Length: 89
Image 1: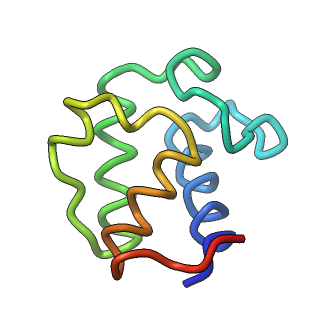
Image 2 (image 1 turned 90 degrees about the horizontal axis):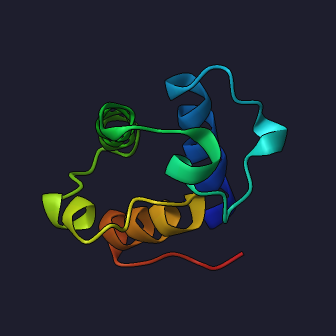
């Protein structure tokens, strides 16, 4: 799966989590907490959706290390978990 396709799916799931967000508002460096007021429940919901969508398991260490912050960070994590990395866009 290409990086751009991963980003598009992440954005779609963010919109599904917080349906008042429009796709045009979401940039790769948008911060989920600061820009879209995600709380801990929203983050956990998003992680579950990501795990289901990409058939992966996102470990607690990503939460503990504060890595679930932007589309770009999430994309990097998913790339690493899918098959050790994919082509950059």
